Image (cartoon, rainbow over all chains, first blue to last red; front, side, top):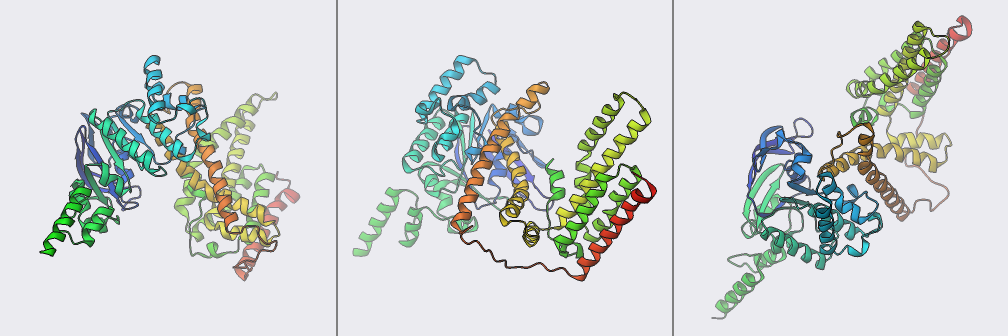
Length: 271
Length: 254
């Protein structure tokens, strides 16, 4: 379990990046962190693996207070995949890139080989095994960065904008992988602007605006509230937009619900 | 390190020193840099260092300037130590002169840092490029210089992000002996170099897309003109230069 207790953080004195954030993310949750540019999303997740320590309040991961732990120690349990893959790829080959974290953690060699092979297959990178990461395309580098963290099997996985630059097929693959990891009991936190991705695949949303938690709860409940989305400068998912335009009594993110509600209204109006 | 660099980063200001023509300031830094290289006399070097103080006060850049000075303490210590060791091991050992030389060298460095800090803190990169162009420096070179300066803060921010990313994969920068610690920087340096190349390519493409180099003759939106304040500053700088230089010419102070 990850607990934020009254956490505040500022990069420059006087301007809060996070202000009195209190949150609980349970084990095995799949949750999205949404918010406008500069809302504090990345600052928030950097607190979970100890890259940033709260200036007031506390962040507890499992039973560890992040203030009393090192990043290396927390990183074993909390994997953080950065937005820009070019900020982390450095090894001579894709294979070595994938094993970097595991070597740092001192895992046994046969375990490392096994996991590297799993990641090569899972992320469709096997054919690049011996290639330098820099020769891969943008989307492939993005997947490699993701794979290099998932390969060491952390209990909590945080992804900063994982879907940018991915086509629909890769997004769906990613979503299925997240679901599968999630059903294996992993906690997954996705920082994103991709509203369709959230509406389709992620059950819970934490909405952040100007360093504060604006709202949190089930995705459908949050993403159908016009006021919240406007305050956080977010576009509604298409189905919600459609629901509003049809003035449905119950706007929804589910295709079935929207169509059946629309049909019901249509039939009512015929009578 | 990034703190020290921010002691050279331009911040907009409204003081006369900010508004001054960069060419006038260039005269000052060229003359006084020359002086700090010519002289080894400790008092002269201290005087050169103190020549920057009125500028710091007029331009109201005390805290940023201090960052550049305080931030260079490590380098100054290195310079002192290095010079001291070299002179101590020289054949005709003289402890006093070794100490004196090492101190002079450190103050020389301090003076240079201070001169360049006041210049870069108060001179916008665009104005500097424009003044270089008006001084007949080819535009390509002026622009290259300008961009190199402008990307320093970007690079220092990027270094921080890369370090965070690698730490998140269990890299411990402070672990191991000296060799190991140097090796720990490889996962930071390689992404930094590669993403710099990528950025350079991107910037070049973006510039060409906006017709950079399309015509031989460029025009400028602003033309810098030397005013009487600039002239006065040039004259003061030149007088200071002649005054200090005459110490060497007539009094034999080296």
